[in-house]
Image 1 (cartoon, rainbow, N blue to C red):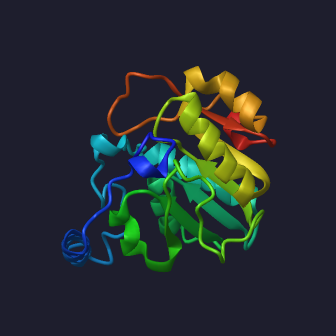
Image 2: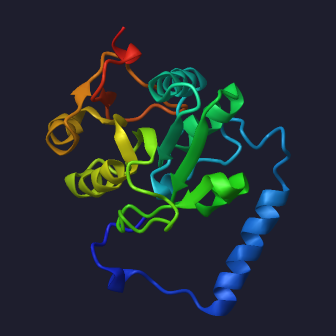
Length: 210
């Protein structure tokens, strides 16, 4: 993930390098069986991209929460939250789910995968209409005002109203100012313990407070 505000700082790949990268992703995708595709950890977390997957219990709780928030047949956007997307697919609920994610390894999910770089928060597919998701669950990769500010722009563009944000407790003030969110009592857990306390924030009546 690139912290730069400028597209000029983004390195450009040569055609040969890009082709080799695409071949690598294709080979990686072939190694994942259909049964493994949606299991948590099917794609290994990469700390270099600030990836830390939720525990199975947390992923399930968050998935069930957004299904409830979206309603029957609702649309859910998982913004940098691949383990919640995977759990949603396991639940097989009557919802439509899209994963917006920087890591192209998740392209194994086909049309439900959309490449997303938070440094270009509104660089989205033309067919992704504004306010087209009943709920957005977002997990910004970095605990910084700059990162959350840009993720907030994407979130506001996508959601019809409901937002579930998962980020550090230190981001509470920014979560409230940028998105009007309140901290929940639920404490999310990760497969590996993080140094920073993690919390959930919402702007609607949520089961995460029960």
